[in-house]
Length: 360
Image (tube, rainbow, N blue to C red):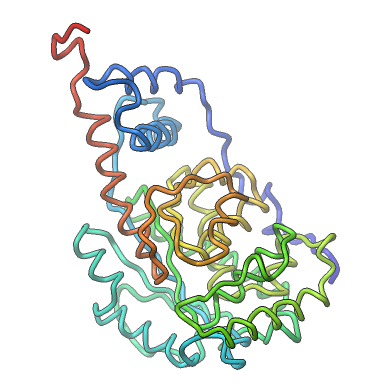
């Protein structure tokens, strides 16, 4: 595949700002002066520092953190490789789950309701289109399903370009509601295969290190999954691969749109809340396109999927929680929202030694 020069494929197109670190010393002093031993709140302190630094870019005010109308966007798409039985369910389940999301019956709905999180569902290209006028549903399809990545490129570079633009549009629309944190989730039978293959290409790792059990396949299905991804890798010159070519070769319609949405969120200077394995691989693609996007990413959790820790290592990421989750849907991101709120609360409201007149 020849390298494309489309504008959307360049770091310059996304125009993501470089975070000014000049306030970091003051931010850290603000945290250290709270009525606690230095570092006693552990990772909550580094989370508060990252939030304060990101949010200080817009108004140069590092003294307050806000968690405003947090949102989760779940992108759904189907995968040609699913016809080989690499998942516990057929592709038709993707559409059924989209309907379940819209009916409020999925795990992500329960968590979003619990924590007052906005939820949007995006049809990026599911096999059976969902007919609905639901206000939380966005249709921006790239097709019915990707091609079988074990035999052919999953999509064309034109579809990659359109997918990035679709993701950008969806994120901008959500940011216009006033949210300053977008978490990302996914739904797509076979998408852990696409994510594993992407990770092979981007991290230059064998399929045996990236392929896991997904949502609970048996050992024979796992063997098939590894073999199919190894077959795909044989036809791709990994030493020359660009992130855009990788998306075209083995990506997913939902994954490419997530990448575009992440880059648009970073360009707006807002927080990207990264969910599990598939979303972390999408984050890695985004960082390969624009390394500056990494500054705006917070990693919600480490899942039980085999390749997730490898993806996190590639991103030098320290996730907030590890609950053995392997569901997707953005559920890990939703569970992390209260931690962001807690970080903001202590940063904004906890007394300092001086204000509390405590002498140590």
